Length: 226
Length: 251
Image (cartoon, rainbow over all chains, first blue to last red):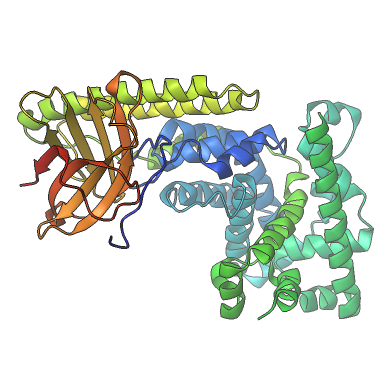
């Protein structure tokens, strides 16, 4: 039998030209069964539909995640017009590379956030040094969601967990993480910017990340318990 | 590179796009599920910084401008009316098969966690049917190749193979299929012009004599010389038996 030969199970494969689909795929099943977040499950379904050229699903995906992407772009670029433009570029890239997304490698939300961050930082680096300086004047804390009772009522559970996790970071950790994430600085550049030892920066980032991971794990276990 | 060094690297460069990471790290990540999982964990933790941001209001015209640039790739192309009639038949047949098989799957899985799957399947099914309807309305698609298989003169069984040239997949379905003899199965074989097997798959038969399966296929229809369905005793048989029940010579 040639190497191309493959015996398939009795599972139903619905097909879309150019894209393999198995509706009962085990990975999808695990993803769906975890109580990680309904949003992520919905996003995975939307991504599936987008991969099948469903423009309406793409519109829904945009409506759902555009505020998040725009927030990242505005935070990184500090300029509304640029942020709007990069946001559009990010979603266009999602559409143009819709067949390439691999759900086994990354959740849709993380994929989107990383893509948005990356494209915004590319734009930031392409801009003049003056623009970078003006952006860096924005204190990172000002951009984080405040956790007032009114806000809490409308925040999604994941966002509430994120707000809490970021708020619980030490100021040194938050500052180092923000500079790395939103400005794309290396550890050495952060140390130079903050005028502190490289070891301190590494330690702040490592500990800060551990705290965020712990918060995420806690959020997930609470979500599963519900 | 070992896992410890890889994870040290990811501590500083985990936010980088993978294409920009050091080649040895990329190579390690390709083969190490633990480090890949760690990378995803770290990125999810970083993502909290973004999720915690104030979500601004998206300008009203952004969505409309974006959607103006997004043209769903058309599934409908011009072609002959004869092809349209064939597509109509195959599209309809495939739709019926999909509905029936999906229904079977829905009812065979009753656990509570399946509810979400059922919804998802229904959505996908609807999408699939919409797609078939697109084809039905149109005149064909250059990346699809249809093969119709005949049985014996006295047998009502007919089979169809939809060859997705772009996805390199074949979707086979048959109607009025009698159950195979005890301890035997049906198997679909795709043979090259010189009789070599280039794809095969077991063909399960469901209620109502409907049967369907999927095969990995070559990307070109020119490589295919013959498609047959045989009765086999061994599901893993590498060579088709002489007991051919359906066949088609591909022009």
